[in-house]
Length: 174
Ligand code: FES
Image 1 (cartoon, helix red, strand yellow):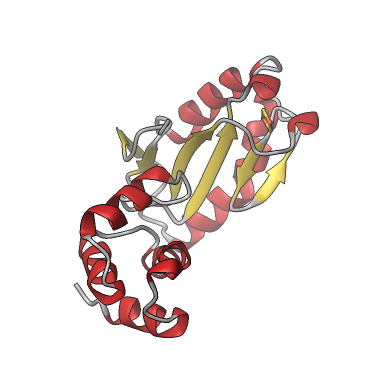
Image 2 (image 1 turned 90 degrees about the vertical axis):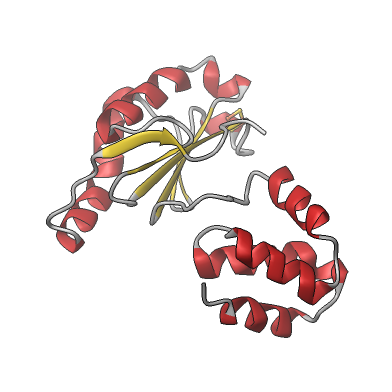
């Protein structure tokens, strides 16, 4: 794989072990996830043992070691959201997109992740779609929240749709 982008990220941030997290964040932006080859390259360039790079990449939920969809949906299953029915909203999203939590749709459009708190408990249940918070979510709002993004995805990929493998891409809880 072309690792030029990794080299550029490290060059921008400096080949300093203390910059590991910043480097991984930028590498993930470049590749949409953290490929193994990229992690090895980061380890080499920052002069850090690969095992440490892997453990940092594994530890933080923000990092993904498997390819993510072009759109990221996060649903909070923390206590404040759970008591207001976030599990039912999750089921509705899973049904609507035919993807399980932790998975990515077959057309690579959507990844669905669960989180334990998004820091907006008063707005619960909370769903975040591509960084945009949708508070006080309900099962009936799922379609309207997803519709614009699904429509744009369908327009960009007419042969696709959002059929999904449902295969988990990553564990939902770390
Ligand atoms: S518990 Fe859901 S935002 Fe805090």
